[in-house]
Length: 270
Image (tube, rainbow, N blue to C red; front, side, top):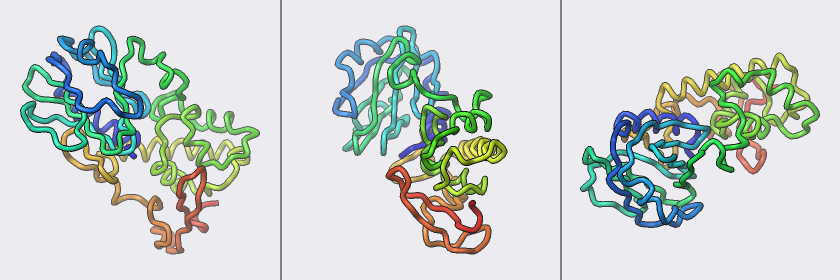
C-alpha cells in the first residue's frame, strides 16, 4: 500500500503539471472504487482551474475554485501524467483531461482507492478526525507519551493509529521502532517519555528521508513522474523476517500485530 512518503512523492511529481491548468473534462471508465465515484464529478470539475495540490495524511487534495477532489490511492492505486491521447489500459479507470494536452490518469487494479468531492475537505468525515502530520510541529514525543497512558495495546499499532498521528504505516512504523530500539510488541502505556521522544524523532527522520528518496517501491506503486522510489534498499527490518540484522547480525524475528506482519530484532529492540 502506498504510504505517506509515496503519496507525498506523487503530490510533488504531479503538482507542477497541474497548478494553473484548466480541467477540460473528466472521463470515468469505471466508478466502482471503494466508494462509487460521484456521478456529477465531470460537471463539477469541467472548466475549473486547479489552484493547489495538497496532501492530508494519505489523501491527495486537488483544489479548484468551487471545491476539492479528494483522492486516495488505496492498496495499489497511482496517479500519473500521460498524453491525453494515450489509450487507456486495463485498470486505468479515470482521466482528468487538462488544457495542456495531458491527462491525470488514475489507475487502481484492486479498486480500493477513492475519488471523492467536497466543498469543505478538512471537514469531510474521512479527514475531520485525523491526528497531526508527523512532520509538523504538532507532533512530538510528549503527544505520544500522553496519549499512550493507560493503553495496553502494542506500541506498533498505537503509532499506526491515525487519530494519534497520521501516515505512519506498516513500513515506516517498523523502521522507526527499530531505529529507536523499541520492541514493537511492548505495551504502549509502558514506554517512558524519553523513549517516546526518541521514537518521534526517528519517525520524523525516517519519513523525511523516505520522501527525499522518492518513497518505497512496493507492488504496483510508481511515482507521479513515472519514476519508482528508492528507499526500499535502505530498509532495516520491514520484509526481512529471518534475515540477519544489519546492526548486530542476529536473526530478525517476525510476529503479527494488529493483523500486520511485524519484523524486529530481539537484541537491538527492547
